[in-house]
Length: 151
Image (cartoon, rainbow, N blue to C red):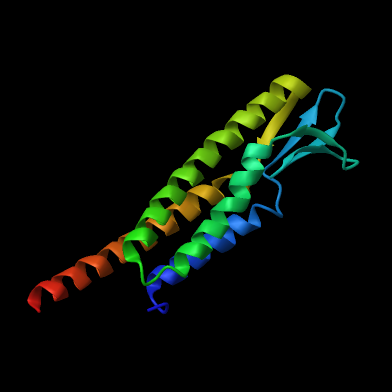
């Protein structure tokens, strides 16, 4: 039953999380008016040189859309699908904390002012879509278990 609404929610969440790999999370400006971009793998200056790396966030931002896509194909194993969804929601909320932490570290290390982009809320929006998918999977599991009791 891959043609369920949960699949659409998980696909939307994957697309939203995939956009984080291409759009900047924040822009930063230091005292000498040098511009920096905070991308998924770290802080980059205007010339493209890496000023600060953050591998844990990069790993999370690559792993989260993949987990949502994997969850789509576990449609026959609903319990595992629900666990993947909950784990991914926790990763999304953790990624928000890491985004804040690394931007705070960049402010203190590079002495810059941070201006967050709208893309910072993408993990939260994807977490909401993943929760909606979890809710639909849970309803399907309850329906299947009730049908098993009737037999």
